[in-house]
Image (cartoon, rainbow, N blue to C red):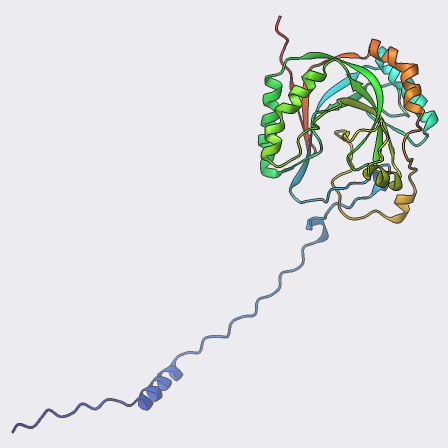
Length: 315
């Protein structure tokens, strides 16, 4: 019988561990990981600051929609520039002076009550207050431009005087309501409806009262609360007048100092007899001299404004 091959001896696990430890002990030790240093804080001028709503800077006007970074307020309107030598210009100054006598806290729109020797610019709104994200601005501008390219210039006129409030019932306005040209303005406003719906913004009012505002006053908070519960004066509409280039009652961030809240006079509404008296005194002349041509369409998005000519009328 042949003898078997001698068994091979293998190192035990203990011997392997000892050998490995001996080799590892001869290797250079890796340095411990360095502690990460904290970056220094950015200086204050590089830190974005959320806007603070301070009515003291805006004649007591407050914003009511929270500020959102990257969101832009938009407003589409037909402008009207009233030349300083025109009869309509003189009439508007007389109307405003009458209102100022009755409501000393009223403010003009489109002109200054300290400088009456200048043109007056008023706006006829075609949208409610609208808010766009940054990536929506180009498409919105394109939609407004398309309306201007497909709309002919048209004649319009003012028909009467009215009192209207904004949606939040924080301000009341004296307005010149449109008569002739109403259908043209409505067609333009309705052309924007698909775009507004696509970005989940409110479309224009179902029964719009197109108008140009020429004066405003702050409403008492109690009056705003009462009106929102349904006891709105008959002459007051739910429509909002948003004036491009002026701080609006929206958007908002922060709160105002208490002294700012108390330093601006408010009213419950215009005196009940004021608008009827204005109509009696001025409407006939307003109808006679308040005719104008709608020639441009404007949009303001944030601080950026764009304007386009309407198309020439067909002969």
